[in-house]
Each structure stands twice: as structure tokens, then as C-alpha cells.
Image (cartoon, rainbow, N blue to C red):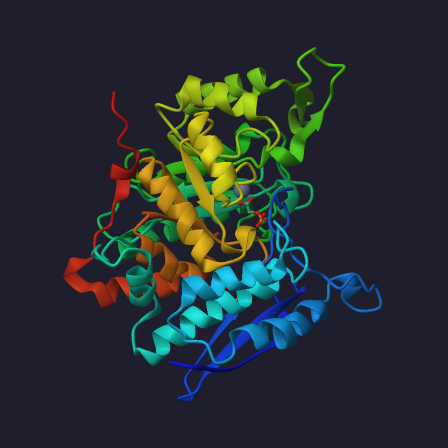
Length: 440
Ligand code: PGA
Ligand code: ZN
């Protein structure tokens, strides 16, 4: 269907910062709409999120420039094209931008159009978004796989002041028979965690992703609390509910050429009162996976520390999922290097790290072809938009990271997946622990 018009507006994300909503209207009156999320612990190699920089509004975080780009150059480019032409339109937007990182028009402007376009296309075909995306992604593949949620219940690092060094401590209901049962289990564990914190006189205020953010004296204490909550809820740690981590170590890393001769940096673990090398940090992860039912570690090394990543993958990559977020930034160039150098074994997928739906599909496809896992992810600054829930089912990657089972910016994704599971009925598959079936 021919595109009649596109428009954009500035509204708020879950942190209260401005972001962009784009609407694509088709000539038959159908329209699609999408809101762009925003990160806090962003990777240096992400596509550029264009902010106004004019401190008289929203502390410089306004997105009026991006809106102008949508309503001028991008509007001119896209109007009158066919809404089914997602790949070519995405490519044309990248070409029009002309920079390698979408720095001219803004990845937020381009992504808003890209996602609203997919929504408009799905709407005019009267298809649920996940079905339309599934056909775009892999027309021959049956859409049936729900993702196992990675549910961030303790927030630290850049997402919560005065909490742990590490950013995210997550529950994964790997033993549940269905997505719905998994959500119930982790929601129960989340409530038990709250009771445990209250009993100890610790704060139950939440961080950016809905997880609690108590001031803890060690990083290990966070994992101990998760185990206690799983047990208190009557579930079995490791069998029913596993643990996933995103320590987001780029935030802890400084290049310190004096410390060693390799030109590599070191990691500041403030809670533990020590600064460690990548080998020492790798040893910490080895200990943690020995002591706890941890199935996944994201950004266990910093985005600049390729040597650290390679060593870590050699040491524990046959036993645990090692997810590159800041390292790979949903970018096929960086992912290709990661695969070639065996620097991880999974990728985190964030649409706004790269800036179009088509490039996001390419990253997921490249990962799947290399037998890597992929995890579809929210940003710490989210909105009510549920696009990623549909993307997870459409691509069948089997995992989604969408925050705690609390706060509407997070639960909106889980709730949408509950609807999709219902829609799929008996054909729905929940992969559970099969995601982590490593060859012994
Ligand atoms: P961000 O954090 O959205 O603030 O970048 C999420 C993550 O690191 O996975
Ligand atoms: Zn991360």
C-alpha cells in the first residue's frame, strides 16, 4: 500500500526524558506508530541518538532536530513508496543519512520511521505484528517460539545510584512449561525478593528497569538474595529458575597502560575495594558460575577489551552463554569480528543500537547462522511500545530481556507476549533450558 504521509512528535520515555514517536500513514487510511527507546549505559559504537543539545529545553535532551529530519528529508524520501518495501526503504534511509553511524539524520529518527512502517504494513494486511515481522524475517519458518524472559530484579551500576557495581541480576524461568507459567514463577520470586529485602531493613525502591536497588556491601550478596528468593518461592534454583547477569563492565573499565604492559585496561570493583585485570575478572566469573546456577553473562568484559572477551570465551564459553551487548552493538561488522575471533557466543539485540529493522534482522540472521544465541532487548529508557515482544516471537530467538515483572514500561512487553502465546495456542513452543544445551 502506498505511503501517504509520515509525521513525528516528541513525548516522554520511562525516565521522563523526551523521545520520538513516528507515525506512518498509508493512502487507505491505515497507520502505524512506533516510539523509540533510549539507553543509559550505551556502547561507544552504537548508532547516534540525535539530541538537540539546546539546554534551554529538557537539559539538551530534546529531539526536535530528529523530528524535523523525519518531517522533511525522510518524509520526502518515503512518501509515495510502497509500505511493503521495508528493506529498500531502510536502505534508502541509510543512504540518505550518508554517515556510517546515522549521525546526520539521527538513528532515533530513522528507527522511528523504520518501525512505524512495519506497523503500518502489518495493519494494512490485518496481520498481528509478529506474523508480519516473521514473514519478513524468514518466510519459510513457522512462527511458534516464545522467548524465555530475562527478568532484571536487582538494578545496580548506571541504572541505580548507590547499589552494586554490576548493573543487572536477572531471573530466567528455564524450567517452566510455558511462557505464562514462567512469568508467574518469576513474578512470585520478585515478590519474595521484596519481602526478603524488607525483612532485612533494605530499601525496596526500584531502579530504571523495575528491579530493586538496595545498597549492598558486596556484589555476591545480590546473587545470594536472588537464590534466597527463588527458594522462598518454592522453586528450585538452577532447575526451575536460573540466573543471568549483565555486569555491564564497560562502565567499570579504564584503559590503564601503566598497570600492565599489554596496553589493556583494568576494572574497578568499588564494592569489593579492588581494581582487577581482565584475567582476574574472568576468574571471578569462573568462580561465580561454579558457585551459582548462572546460565548467561552479558558484557562480562568491556567493549574495548577484545582480548579479555576471547580469553573468557575460551575459559567458560562452553558452559555459559556469553552475550555481547556494548561489544557488538547489534552491528554486523562487529558481530562478524566477534564470530571470527570467538569472542563471545551470543549477541544482545537492541533495535536502536543500529537504527533500522532490516539491519537488526541481518544481525539476528548472522548470529543464528553462526549457531550463536541472540537475546532481544529493551533499553533502560523504555516506553509503552511493545515492538520487541513481536520481534522476539517473529525471529524465534528464544530469549527476551525486558526488565522486572513490575512497572508498565517493562510489563507491557511481557503482557504482549502473554497475548501472543494465547494467539499461537497449541502451536506455541517455550524453549526453556534447551537454549543452554551445551555439548559436554
Ligand atoms: P541501557 O542498558 O539500555 O542503559 O544501555 C541495558 C543494557 O546494558 O543491557
Ligand atoms: Zn547490557
